[in-house]
Length: 219
Ligand code: DC
Image (tube, rainbow, N blue to C red; front, side, top):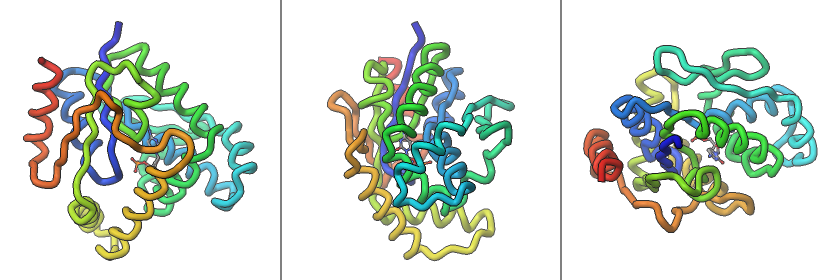
């Protein structure tokens, strides 16, 4: 039986940074499910489908072959044979992912891929519905959050470090809109699983959060 740690929470709460560190410490595989939704969003954007067109999204998702592999412990995302790990990080792709991830056909396809991965290896998986839907029997479930202002600031610093021009106000606005969509969609909305441990990272360092989660795993 493989071991699984589910980390859910809103955009910018620090899920991927934390999940990567935990996976490294425990020798588990890190699965970034948001990256899969982003790859699907990129596919949809490439086809020129508008966010309002749910029918076309369902159709488009049929010919998206998404998979992940690992290079030096880093997750690489493939879309129809192309390494799209860099392309999927654009804000435009993230915003489309938040819209297209509400589509049932998109979710069915990606959830099945995620469940297969967790069957074959010990995983730290992060996303929005891991504890509630993808891995309801995960050994440890965490709901990681932080205030909107802190999350916007972190994202702003991340983009600034990459010399990408951005406005803090715009980022905060995007985060508010994305939370609104992720938490209020009909299918698998972002919410804390009943048996998940709530962690607010607003005033904690990355190492403090990692330590708390490792403690829960060891207990
Ligand atoms: O974590 P992220 O920003 O890379 O995720 C991009 C979008 O994908 C996010 O707005 C919601 C969606 N998503 C989802 O619906 N379910 C998941 N398990 C992961 C991400």
